[in-house]
Image (cartoon, rainbow, N blue to C red; front, side):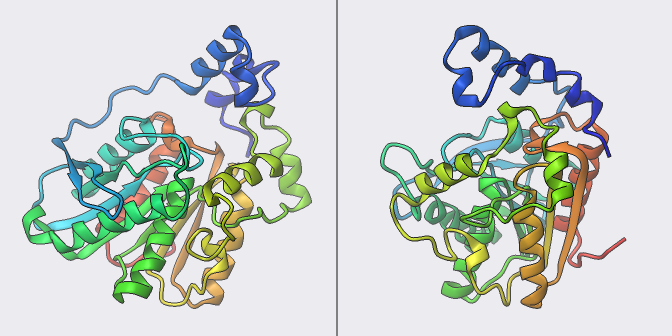
Length: 315
């Protein structure tokens, strides 16, 4: 279907901007890029929150907990940002956590992992995420959650980290979450080529919002910091057998669509219970948009159902 009209209505702000980096070259371009990236969001669910830190191998890891523990499920959520950006206050982190908490009744733990900047590289961000999942699992009684109903998910780079954390926990602890929920994740070190039809559709995306092969290669190289790619850095390279049931969400108009779609096939070949859902008309990062948009609302409902219900089923 066409790109959602709520998005195309604002594309004029991006006229003449070749990339996010290009936008920083002039104040007016930067202003318009920021205006595009900060759309009206409307109200978010009012749920109780508290901030604390979890001990990790590289020092304390900040987390934000949403909702009171009531003996039910828990969801560890990891934001995106090309491994280099993002925090607990960005909409993809805060608003997604609030929505899933309110819709599923789950206690949600949002992770403020160390970003790949200032000399930080893989596996440091992943180490932080693994430490938080272990803490949630081991502190289930204190948190007031069911230790058998802990799910794990993330958006974009956070989707990578969620799947990689599950792989680490499988291999090191012999443990898996109830469900994995990666949303528009990056899972390959080199993006698979899109089909000609998908490539044509991607051409409708403004240049400032594209993830070109060169852009993605630079992001991934920064994350690796000169290390060779392996399955913990990019899960498409891993043995995927034994991973938790997975709900993988892609966006129709997203250069990362190919990595998600290809990963679904790899999961199927490995015998993993996987459901793939495409958010029609959406671009990468759509969890930063208002839940009043129907495709965003539908994905939040699917995520919440995966967290609350132990079995992922096709409609």
